[in-house]
Amino acid sequence: MAAVICREEELEKQEMIPGSVDNIPVFVCRTSEGEIRAFIDRCPHQGACMSKGKIDGAPMSTAPGEYSFEHEGDIVRCPWHGREYNLRESGKPLAPVKGKLKEFSAYVKDSYVYVELKRGS
Ligand code: FES
Image: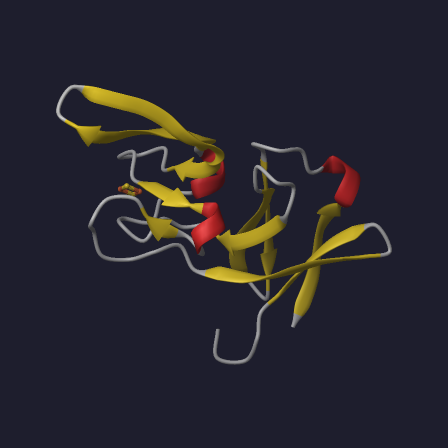
């Protein structure tokens, strides 16, 4: 089953547009490179609505006292407890915790963004 979530032109980088497909809450967004992605709109931790969070980057450290801000525009941060998930790595969490954001298929047809739930997804 697939559903239209928004018009392609409405979807800006670092923004999320929520919707639903067959009563499953989803959001669509663009990665830093402009690819359109779709994920479940519930955090795997305690179910927060991810589309009320923020897409940004994340501080990374390679040595004590050394930090850099990386992955700008590819990290979605949960609004409740701040867990971070990488949009370009299929919703993989940055921290070593259980659960990733479930990703769905997203595509553009006739200037509309569709999200498709595949059987078994
Ligand atoms: S509900 Fe998202 S980090 Fe807790």
